[in-house]
Structures are given as C-alpha cells and as structure tokens.
Length: 255
Image (cartoon, rainbow, N blue to C red; front, side, top):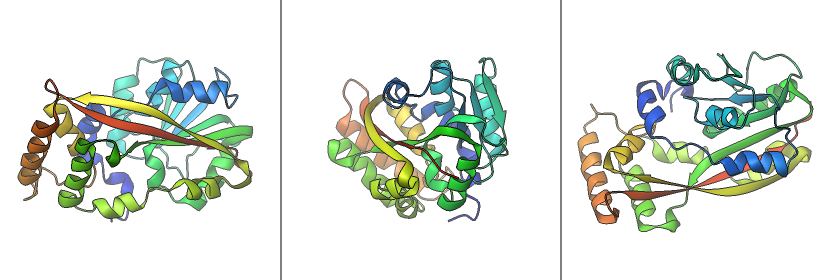
C-alpha cells in the first residue's frame, strides 16, 4: 500500500471522471426530509475527487466547498464544474481540511472515506461542523450476490488487481461506522443506484480502479480479455447492468 493514498488516482483521473457512477437524488432527499438538512445548508464535500458527489449537492441547490488533496482530481473537478454557482474548491485532506471552525452545516464524504485516518478525521470534522451539524458518509457498494455479472466482476478484480484484497479490507462495515459516530449516530439508509454500461464504459470503469493493472502492466491485456468475455456472457442489447447500492451513514460529531 502506498504511503500516500491520495496519489493512487493521479493516472486515472479521466477514467474516473467519465466512467465512475454518481450518486442518487434519493440520498439528498433522505437527508433533507428524514434528517432535517435545510435546502440551502452549506456542504463541505470532503475527498471530493473529480466532483461526482459535489455535483449531486450542487444539483439540489446547496452551496458546496469541495475539498480534495489530489491536484489532478481537483483540477478536473474545477474544470468540469467551474460554471456552477455556489461552488468553492479547496486543497485539503480529510484530517486537515483547512476550513474555518464551526462553519459547515453538513459534511459529505463518499468513497474517499475508507482512505482517511478515522481518529484524526473525526476530530477535524467535529471542529468544522456548526453545533448540530451532520456528517454523512456514503459510497456505492457492489453486491456480488445480486447477479452473475457482478460476481464475475468481483472475481476478476481479485484475480488481476494489484492490491485489491488489501483495498477492500479498508472499507468499514456497519458496526465500525456506528462506533465511529459514537453517541451521535443517527442511522443509515440504502438506495439502489443501477448503471448500464457498454463495453467501453465497463473497460473505463475497471481502469478507474486504483488496484487495476495499468496499461503498461503485464497483466493488463489478460485482464481486458477476461473483461471482454465477462461482458459477452452477460450483455443485454450491448450493455451490462451494474447494480450499485448506495449505503449512507449519518450522525453528529461532538468535539
């Protein structure tokens, strides 16, 4: 595992921007209706990457401060969303955002959460949240049992991924997330988030994974051939259904 995980995605930015899935509108609806997040609440999107999560909150009218440590990903976010009102972009890490004390209504953190150091991150987020402010941690989960295609995709990542097993082990389970929030834990929700991909999209999706062998790796061609077979075996009218389940956890954080 690299000492600095923020650099893992630098060579994969364009694939990440084009082929990674976004997040469902139902997530924001849940936060607003069930968790009391106001429609114009200020959001700090931590580990914003290329802006997939940032876009979701901007689309719903929230002012967003997108915090991202990776220069290439932050530049892609700025380029893609520069014209959107209500957006600020900042260089910072989950454990050291550089944001002011008690200035944020809602912290959003998507897939980047599993790369963060839990203890320092919790302290930092408690510092920047306003009293009563919420943190929402969420990600798009693959559930291999949902289809033969997803099981085959999971098997492919285990077979060809350079460190896929170690990366997968970093993802927190439900008890770990509840323990991380502690007394402030308010609950979790799940939202279906299916995507349909042609082969170019599927190939781009796997290239966006930090553990996938890059094009100059000796296993890359074999991985692509295996991916083509998987696609051919499961495609319907030239596309495969990539069933994600967006899993979200929310709570307050005491200082």
